[in-house]
Every structure is written in C-alpha cells, then in structure tokens.
Image 1 (tube, rainbow, N blue to C red):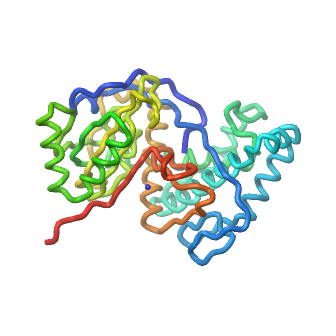
Image 2: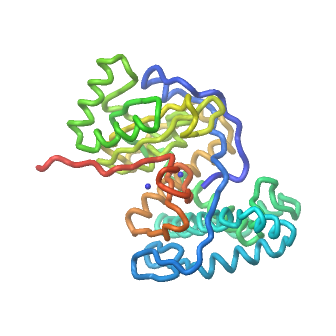
Image 3: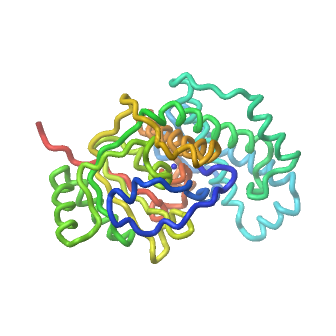
Length: 345
C-alpha cells in the first residue's frame, strides 16, 4: 500500500477542486501527517512460517522480542510516564510507532543502497544536537535517542532519495473526485475492473457535472504541494489509488464530513524523463521542498516494499501508504490501492 516529518509545516485551506487544473496549481506544503501510533504484541505469528516476527521485510525479520525490549527500555527510563501509560493501557501506541520507524528505515536503507544515496551519521548528529539535549515536544515518550536517531536518519534518507527523483517522476491517470470514503471505495473498485471501466466512470461523472478527468499528466516537480505529498506518485502502473484530499486545515483526514477523496487509475508511472521544476517552487523554501522530497522518497520505499515483499504481524496493524506507517486496521487506512484488471493482449 506515505512517516511524518519531525516538525509540522503550516498549510493553506485546500477544500474544493473545481477543475483538474486546480489540483496542479501551486500551494504550500501539506501539514505534517498524524503522529505515529502503535500496538504491542507478544508471541504471535505473521502467518508466514515465522513465529514471533513483528514484521518481515524481504529477508529481514524484526522480532516481537526486539520491539518489546526496546519499548520496555525506552519507557522504563521514564518511570512516571511508563506507569501512567500502563494505567491508561496505552503502551500499544509505542509498539506500533516503533515498528513503523523500523520498517520505514529498513526500506529506505535498502532503497538508498540501490540508488547510491548516502546520509552521513554526522548529519544526523547535527540534527540531534539542534534539540539541545532534549527530545522534541511532539516525540512519543518511547522515543529514546536511538529511536530518534533512526527516525531522523529515515527522514533524511527519504529526502535525499526524493531529491534525486524530483525532476524525473511523473504519472498519467484518469481521476474522479468524490465526497466520502464509502463512495471512493466503490469507485475504486469500479475503476479496478480495467482501463475501459475507469474511462466509462470518468465519462459518467463528467456527464453529471462532477469533478473528473481523463489522461491527466502530473510531474512531481510541477505538481502542487498537496498532490506532490500525496500517494499518487507512489502508485505503480495499472493500479487504482484512492486517498483524501487536504481539508481546510491542510490535514488529510478521512473521517471529517467535508473531506473529499481523489480516486485515480494510474496508467503510467515514469522515472526516466526529466521535467523542468515548477517556476514557483523556490517560493516554498528549501525546508518545504525537502519535506516534499521526503514524501516522494517514502513513497518510493513503499513501492520497494511491494517488490521485495513485506508482511506485518496483523496484531500490529496494517501499512498505510498515506503516512508510510502502521495503522490499527484496514478500516483506518487513509489510502486504498487496488491492482487493476488489465485487458488481455
């Protein structure tokens, strides 16, 4: 089936998309994605012949014991917090959060090695030093320095990978916009029947004067911030993707009554053609662009997940492409991806 940056960025109101062109217009960066959440587990199997595995990424096994040991160590060092979390039965938040960080980092390390991208440990040290010896206020209590270092390194790798592909990534797709998750799911299933079904849905929506488009071409380097940070660029060819568009606060919330969803049939994802940068991109600033590059890098890591294979113990939840993190269940995924039926040649 996008982790969150360490510090939130403000975004403008993004509510209505009257035309396909409106989606591509430049806007500020989407606000930082929701905080990582989690679930602890003891002694369960992934169902793939690996008992006591929290996650399997390719040939890498992250054990339940390792997750448990690190959560216990991180929280026990902050005894009052640990006891309070125990009393509130919220230790589950730490487990899923930590596993999300470890999965993201493993995927990004593999992708970085493949792409020849490096991040020096000294650069990570500099970021940690900028905190002045204390964790950021929005860091979960279980984030000791080791977890924080892994999280920062993952963010930096994602940004560097995305930077490499920022001017080389584009997608071509058919799309419709709808007002609810339920309708988005229904339309995604209809599109997944194949390109002809997707084209017919677009035609029907246009006939009803609804927002839709055919053969839309978007280059990452020229897309609006909202679309650049979305899962559309982490979706392969012949795949349908549905995700919420930012609401008034800039958040990609799937449960708000006013949320809109974009449903797209991706015909092609290209990383070989260089596209010129958005002439307004410099106005966003280097920090904002780095975060957009990070979203692209995490999306590419999720595509690698599909290539090398990844399984997560269901007791920890399921992977959500929107935030590149684990969520409690498929019902809480903000992104839906369906492999489409392709016509026989």
